[in-house]
Amino acid sequence: MHRSITVPAGAGFWRKVFAFSGPGFLVAVGYMDPGNWATDLAGGAKFGYSLLSVIMISNLMAILLQHLCIKLGVATGRDLAQACRDHYSKPTVWFLWVLCELAIAACDLAEVVGSAIGLQLLFGIPLIWGCGITVLDVMIVLLLQNRGFRYIEALVITLILTIGGCFAVELFIAKPDLGGIFSGFMPRLEILRNSEMLYVAIGILGATVMPHNLYLHSSIIQTRKYEQHAAGKAEAIKFGTIDSTFALMFALFINAAILILSAAAFHGTGHQNVGEIQEAYHLLDGVLGVSFAGTLFALALLASGQNSTLTGTLAGQIVMEGFLNIRLRPWLRRLITRGIAIVPAVLVIGFFGEDKSTELLVASQVCLSMQLGFACWPLMRFTGDRTKMGAFVNPWWIKLVGWTITLVIITLNVKLLVDTLLPEAWTKAIYGLIGLSAAS
Image (cartoon, rainbow, N blue to C red; front, side, top):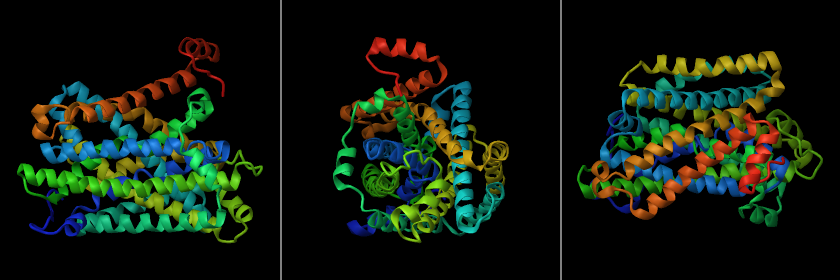
């Protein structure tokens, strides 16, 4: 796929926008996958519109980080995984590869469970059988890859528009509180002080800014056949950033719509403890007063799961080839990744019951967030290195903002680990020293 899509020379602005459109939408898919649904539903039902600010801030972080991925791929001709292999020692490379594979497995777990839930809600298929059916998407990915990268992009955009259309109708029916929405986009310290709210917020962060997307975007931007001189690279960075920013703003609408729908339908209506996607599906028709609200919800969920499958496959191939320089046949790589995801999904559902599926989704997103710092650090390190980037090295203000984002992500994850692993008395003592409350 490398440099397989021609960028017309001398074309006007809009033709070049179209030529570069696509990679941003493949990346945006990861920002609206089924893992987002679980965290956004939980956040909206429990805390109303309060966590909309987390979605907005996460999306702004994503826009900057994906811009840096574009710069790295275009300026160096190397994706993030390849750049890590070039720069770090072999033990470090293997460590980073293992972490990235865990992130991809966590993401794939969310796709498996989300698609299985969508199949169950629409067609009554048991979750365990639905997990098995998701293996068949291997054939879809292989077929599209053989026909060309533009076919993958076209299918992804079609499914994104399907999801967006479903939620536009849902929000029109739900009639959410516009004042509450506006207030929800205002950041508040309560999120840091309330450990339960922080857990969901970090889950939203992990579901929004996904580590393997950083590896993916730095590679697929190179599917465009742009000129290899400085002006051509600058143009590729410009139009690639327009593409990804527009796509990520669409992802912001989807994520915010899920949380807003949950807040409008469940928060303050006696359903604040709705945490299961299946429960939300069954309640929506009654709460919103229309017979098709749940069906639209399930259809969008199924489209989301299938969409994420496509980009998860590509990311897995890029990561393994980039870090280890190992090339597997696409069908074999896909079966390995999907098998790693299916096993824990089937075990949890089989032993603990189908009602634990949404908890599995939330946990997978927190796991993703834990890996994020290990992808952001090398990205900032490489794009701030003049010897690698040349004229495209990060200016001081991007370095400042980017490193701040990276440190915030790492700090929040450390706090979550402290909340989760240490006894409550210890966490209160630690937070007492820094002026935070551990109360949930």
